[in-house]
Image (cartoon, rainbow, N blue to C red):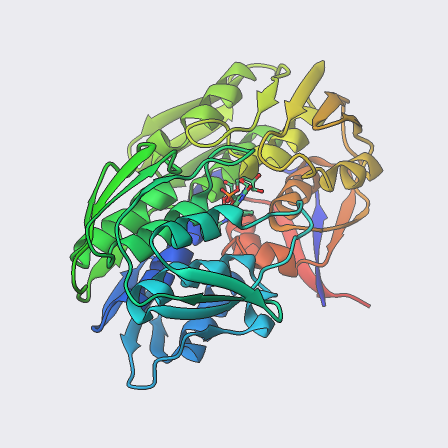
Length: 421
Ligand code: EPU
């Protein structure tokens, strides 16, 4: 297993290119299952989760080829409908093959994804969406078994205890595009990744309106063709580099991203004293003044993303004053708190809120990565910390941040990979 080692307190300067969005690319790759023709996906990030999705598509009888950031997916004659435990258990997002499989093949057997380190993560809304379209669902031997003679359009309310669901919206939309008649998804997720998926489906010939709003309307079509699509930039990677600039008192230009996907993050960083401006060739990020505390509550899009909560917390650990960070999507997503405290941070948890008392400086320490975004938070903390930080279990980071050491080193950080003893 690899670990990352960081020698901190270097100001980051220069330009960084953001990769394609993992969470857009994953369902888009799953959507290729709906087509009988070749699909070409551009700006695909080279990440472990994307490789897992390609293995899953292969297991489902698709031929995939990757050439740089371009992935081509073609159906073969041997299409299958079983998504095995061994793949789904390594990546929860594999569940988003359920919608396209039932939509296209009228049958699907998808391993039931378990919980994960960030919380229980139920899939009731996925099942509600698919069954509303007329599929029979049962759970047998750890698998979701879905069968349908015919799928029909329906009016579906996709709201749960924590609001809308990104992948349940994706799954329902992907099944509905080949259902007979009209479907209305209410309380649909509005995340840019859902919009990107819908845009890809439209390119394949689907009839979808209202994506990007909580009300998505779909008119089913008989079949979908091949399509080419360029995946949107990763807004979470963008936000992570914004915080890298702020936490190191650096000056970074982020290339290839779209500020309009980050309004809530920009709002909070601006409140904290970070200057974010659109310049020729990118988004420039640097401190405008001494940082001040900011209270943050995570919410579905366009609210502050849960996938930026841990990184924001790292910034607040070195911001004088008290910040309160409340998690409304995954109330247990605080696994990074104890690791940040090992680096000298002063954070205590009160239910689903973290109270952060800013200190002068973090001190480098051996810490353990636990999930993708918690790992990113530890990297940010390590960049700001005095001395050496060793982050073990770096494979979490490889799921979602393309070439992170190369990108950070180019900005002037000192970060490298070592084999863990
Ligand atoms: N929920 C339910 N029932 C469901 C589905 C979700 O109650 O059937 C709840 C969840 O437990 C959570 C809330 O609804 O409280 C929102 O979860 P959502 O379904 O939107 O999450 P997801 O679609 O499984 C995606 C991202 C996550 C990101 C969340 C929230 C992908 C592959 N994953 O997950 O990304 O945190 O949306 O924005 O798109 C990450 O990249 O690190 C990551 C975890």
